[in-house]
Length: 214
Image (cartoon, rainbow, N blue to C red; front, side, top):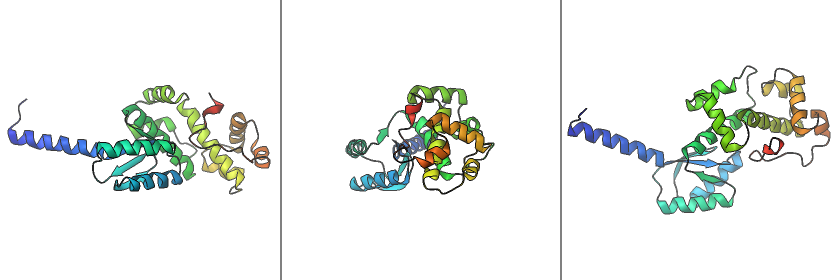
């Protein structure tokens, strides 16, 4: 197939425009809370990188960064526990992790929430391939990751006495209080009531929840 010079130029400009947009979108690992967003925003401001939006795991810049700016950004992010990602596979997994973290933090998980279906839609890939890649890169299954995020949210609500166990069960999509309690004990070794009575120092950072399974 041959293109006219005009058509070729239009396609080339479109391609270059899309490539520039890609370079203006950064993916950052280990952003798991609002404070993480604030920390990243402060670093971007220090490097004079103007941004349109900062979300968990993702930054949309207003203009393309220089190599020097990216190098400095990588160093500063690493100092506070973040990682600027360049691998497409890592970016894919981080997108999934951030989606699940935000979902759990929202406390609006439907009882019939189908994680495999929603994750597949999110990244437009077969779930079996996503699940395999996730396990390879994270040394934990996607299902285990989701469970750990939910259990940590249960701990938070128990510690601050914000909701009853029945309310927590509903907000996190558990079919019953009994199911939540059994899963909680399997992960923590304690019942929810025992944890609530002895909770001091027993919560973990959201980006370091894997020890139960590893």
